[in-house]
Image 1 (cartoon, helix red, strand yellow):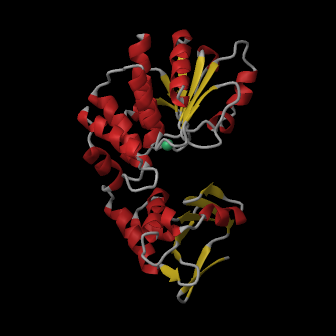
Image 2 (spheres, rainbow, N blue to C red):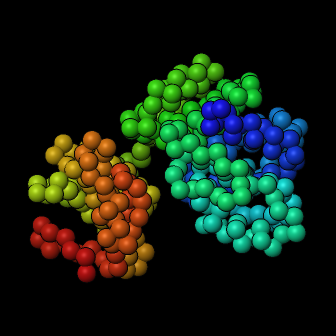
Image 3 (tube, rainbow, N blue to C red):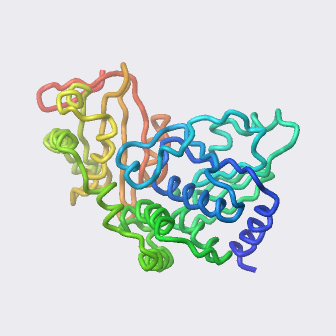
Length: 325
Ligand SMILES: [Mn+2]
């Protein structure tokens, strides 16, 4: 039997014995985690005849995501895990350890059922029902397939949750994980009433003038190292303050730098809290540079195309050059 079909059968079975699940998404949730959680929660409501399951998100998403999802429904903490007969992890199984659920459930008299639906590698949870498909473009793609399996006839709102996840996790159908399946499913979701424009506007094209001013500073300072192919730029705390921007606005800069035609990868160095400089690295599949290797040399982490690390110190400009001191 097909791997996923087998897993879906187990999931369908498992849901028969569950009445009060807790849904858990990763810190700094993205549209895939949120879309997956809200779609799955609505499905559970329909199936179990109850409303508003608790969705645990330790971080409250920013404004852009709030226009796509009912983020007011999220809970930033759980009062009593004992009240839940199942823990359902969506989009990051490793949160089981990061949020110390391994230790929390050890103390419980009755063990909850653990379900993990994810498309990231190395997020397997022991003794859990793991539905991990690393070929899926997004967790929302796996959830779509499950809905298809159980013949859940969902509405346009849920179609939008799922499409938002697939669309953002594929970088707006630009990344390598944009498979024929991801596009086929997206087509089906559009037919059900989801809109690409809605996600695009919320997440990709509604930058504030303050954000763009900050990007302007970074672009003006950008340099390219012809030998290594590194496109690099710098943002100080003062720049962020002067533009009325936030540190969240910095994250898009490394992606823009990475679009410079001679670049092999990009690096943006930005001052954060006291005495801390954050480095974000980006590359593209076709450029054949593994930026996680660079990040690891500085005790950082991430994956092949997007990684980061931190250095103690602050940025100082000397003439045309920047140093960390
Ligand atoms: Mn994802």
